Image (cartoon, rainbow, N blue to C red; front, side, top):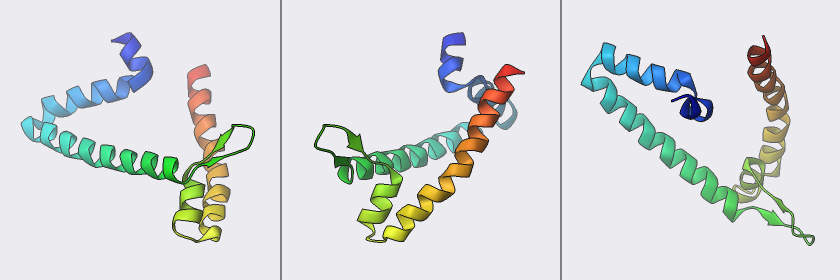
Length: 103
């Protein structure tokens, strides 16, 4: 369980168990439905990322949400806006992740 919690997160394991105990079988149904929506979203992100990625002459690959937003929707400003707005979130999330772990 310790090695699984390092990857999945102990909150996900304890949260699912708590939801089933407190909510009953209905909680399990909602978790399954949420998992299907999450899997469909992740599949769409990966498929679009592979479709719109750029392979450079030296063999390196560039891709991500900013590429399929700008090239897939033909709105270059949308990809640039996404790239700019992600920068503050990267600082906040990395600070929370590493700040809590070191305290």
